Image 1 (cartoon, rainbow, N blue to C red):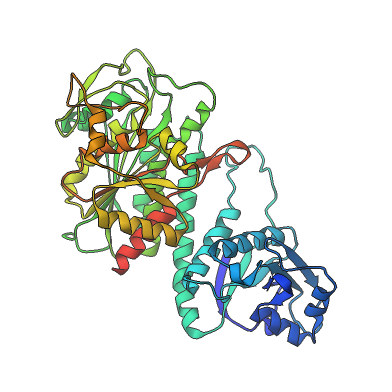
Image 2: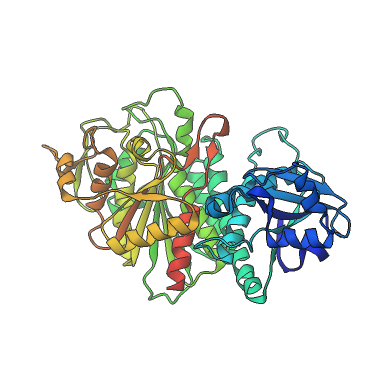
Length: 496
């Protein structure tokens, strides 16, 4: 899909289709009024006949309106004007695109971004339009012998603005939206791949290709290097698999080398059987999405490189499978992490925190300004927050607040959970420094408490994306979250 920003008047715009909004009670937005005036009341006359009330999520397609050079005009319902908010705007964009996809129009000009929206500027509306349309066009059919659906005729969208300042802001927002959309696609594609394809080695290859495309520095540690570094926790998870584990490191430099980087650590379990603590068979295929944290790191770095943000960013991905086998770790095993702390493995299905703890220790060498880990870590987070918000826990209030603010801007929600010392008691072990699980209660928090023991040397935040990284059922597939959140967090950091 091609996107452009243009300063134009609706009554003079040529093309296949113009999109304007209508509020309930048939109240026309300013662009719609301009069309109505140019057509000598044609649109308002149609509305008076009852063909459209202006209710949200409705459209009406008109052809050959007198005095209007555009071949078509699509009216989009916006609901009650006093209830018009960011969610209604986003839904209007999606409804419009869906309706346009049912036509033969090759291009369309949207006159929606200039509609006043509380606490949202023109840049937000344009960025959201680009991301929403790009996601709506997403298809993953590369593993099928034939594509399931034909692509719609629509291939170009112009977003109209009404003044020069909006045009300048819009151009920048457009580029950011395109970059974030590309990052989301990277994360989705990796998540949706079959686990026999998307292995730790495959992730390392993709990182290497990214490094070449965007001039990043890449390094990949294999088993020998990880053994030498003392990564006993990560390697304990990998023991049951024939696929070799990898620790993948990508470095993006947008500032001088001495500037402290932000480190993103993404859980990369490319398939999780649970190991010896085997998962139930139902829906186990969805455990290919257990590398969604890794995918979000690669997707975010793609967006950052496309935007050329003035930041230093390091992506660290511990990648492995978690499989049962004669050499697999067992409940009761005690392993030594890279930090020197010992861990009693009470459940081999609590493997994500084992690979992350060594990656978090490895991050210390970069003397980071902040570290954020991203992981499909606990089913308990799905129970607590459902599929709406990702869980957020942090040892630093300022960092947590930045992520909360970014989540609102990006419409990629997170909710902060406590990380009080009281919960550390859940991880007590009679035989090691800590256990890798803390029992049934507060499962999301105790997992974060475990990780916090490896993050004392820097500001750190943990994102549990178990409920938001993918959808199941008929819409099964990766969501690409939290790439929008992370990208917005980094954009805000770059501005600051």
